[in-house]
Image (cartoon, rainbow, N blue to C red; front, side, top):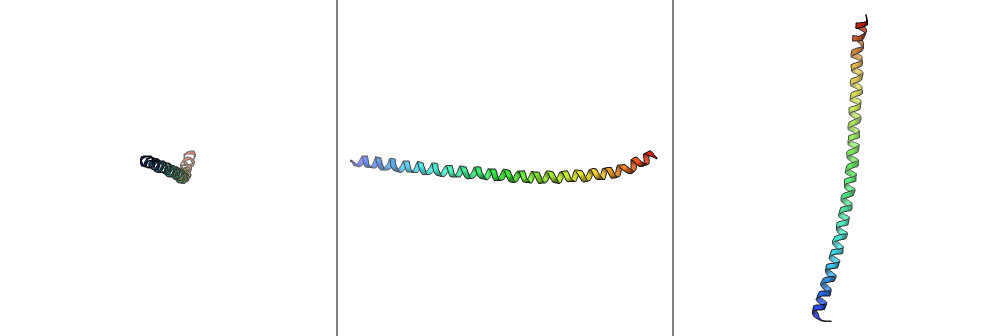
Length: 79
């Protein structure tokens, strides 16, 4: 086997190994990024749910206060 053939074979082996390593590494990075996106979405949904429940409770409290303040006015109007 000539020197040129050995160099060509060695360089193609190194290049192939490098490509395989790069693709494997890139797939792992992509998988990690996708998983982090899912975790962020779940946290965002939990935060939104908590905010919505808080806003709902505020609306319920305001509705109760409004009813209390309107009931005496309605009773006075009926007399």
